[in-house]
Length: 228
Ligand SMILES: [Fe+2]
Image (cartoon, rainbow, N blue to C red; front, side):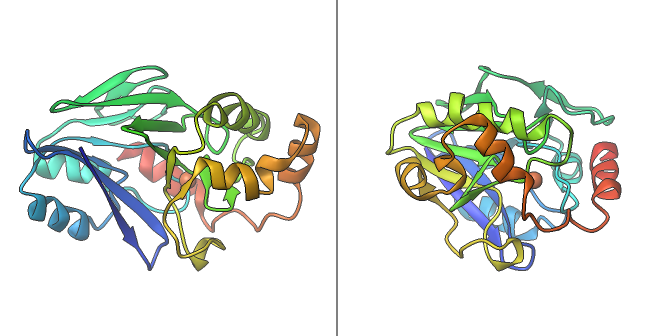
């Protein structure tokens, strides 16, 4: 199994390719509106894309999932809680997705968005924006977001071992984040302020204060991403 991050400095977003080298097949996760870099990476692997996946409905950038799916003639798989209106397959909590011999286990980790999913594959976790390097994704896009994020983090992601490698969907200064694109669960357990809130009320208070404004035009971006 190979997991290849494709970061984009300009937007601070990260797409991923999960490939089974032996089978010559791969999944593309969270492709951007301009998928050139992702598709170039796929070409370099000499792999065939079998499906395009989204971890969640993005509110900060236009997704390329529907476009890439159409262009390559492959299905797009969206979280079962996604409100998307274009034709797609769904996946939900505890589903096992396959690419060649590689199994990808899905975990519903809502909070940043109601449909947010994490993907566990070979000791690694693609966590969307549930968990980021040194912080967590904002939980104020919908009313129950912060409480749901608490349970996704403390009852789901933090049950894994320290060695679990964490691959978020954002990095870099545009999002107030470090340049690093990955971390470990152990490092975050030790150093991440959000994860060191002692109680649920403390976490809710922490997540409710001091966050920058939501991305400009986020409601229109969500609407566009749902239409595909
Ligand atoms: Fe997001």
